[in-house]
Image (cartoon, rainbow, N blue to C red; front, side, top):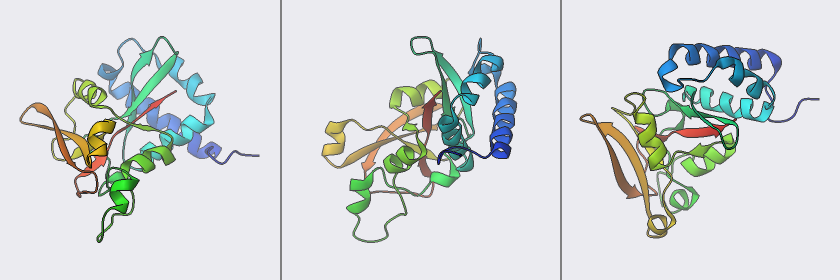
Length: 187
C-alpha cells in the first residue's frame, strides 16, 4: 500500500535521475558533498521525495545547496534561474488573498509551500542562494516576512537587479505575473 505522499516507482526513479543530473552539473552549489551520501537519504524519505517532485513540477529545479552537520540533513533549494513558473501570480498568504475584493489569484505562497511540504526562503537564505549564481534577474520571489511587518499588512520579496540583491515590500494581497516564491526542503 502506497502512502498518499509517495511517488510511484517510475516517477521516483525519474526524479532521482533528474536530481543527480542537476547535482552533477552544478557542483559549485554543493562543494564537498557526494551524491552517494545524498541518494540514500532521499530513498529513505518518500514524503521528502514527494515534496521534491512538487518543487520540480512547479518549475523550481531543486538542488542541494548545503548540509547541516547538526541535524545531518541535506538542504535543497529551488535553483531555477527565474522564480518558478508554476507558482507565479500568487499573494503572500491566505489573509492577503482573502483581503482582495476582486481579481483574486488562485493561491498564496504560504499555503502553497505548506501543501508542498517546503518552507519559503528567508531573506538570509535568499541572499546565500545568490552567492551561488544569479537568480531572479527578470522575476522576483516572496520571502518569509517577519510578524511585525505582516501585522501591518506588508510582505517582503527579493530579486536581483544591476548585479545586486534587493529586498522590497508590498501589500501581502498583491500579486504579479513575475513573482512566485522559492522553497527550501531539508532531507
